[in-house]
Image 1 (cartoon, one colour):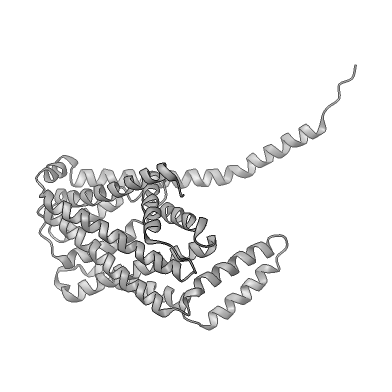
Image 2: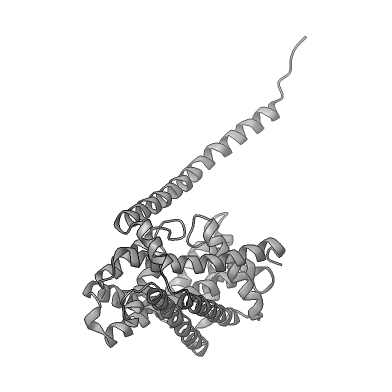
Length: 343
């Protein structure tokens, strides 16, 4: 009796093996990235604990004036709502007419995912996806989030530069340079996106070339074209962008006040202008590879406040208070997500 071999089954097995081989580099790079984030998080946390000492920081927290912490927490909630208002303005520029309460819910859910996923941009992805379900297209939702982030960064850097101008004697020169360069870069990027220049015509020519590529050309070119159109939707609305910047200045101003209030609560002797300089650096460090900035942000507080004469354990206590309040907000987002997902 002869045995027949089923060729289709062998072919399917070979195809599956090929798929596994193709997926390995992608999985490997993702694993390497997660290992890098975990390493930076552990190294930063270890250095902070060695420099400041968790026991001393906890003793500082035990003696904190919790009335100031409550005021700071309430101020953080107001700042969050104002930030959501900025996002609402950016969505309006993309034709999305969203209720503020809906966006607050999505923002809290995004904060929750920032704490449970090993990516600093996880929250941005989540809120862009949530807004795209019923408010606007996915491309326009992403464009609104990108512009929201950009305007937010410019506003906090601008506040930092203003703080340097108001009280230059208490600010280290290196921080002044970082703030000024960061603000210039942010304004330059915004200008390239919003001001019509010859570069826009060159970008259009590049899109035409992309669309001529076989197989992926029409799909890739169409998506990039849609993304460019979404970002350029703000070109004809300078008043809207300016209004978003004003809103962002108010929100980030409150965030600076929050840091100052945490410092007051644990007896750190700093000026409000010094807190204004720390805030944009914390924002930038939070974008580095890590798990939600854990360790790296605390290290930033210890190092920068140390330059301002604050003891390491006190600086760490300020960072821990800030993280605890933000963690409380994110837990609310987790409850909201468990109850209704994105609905």
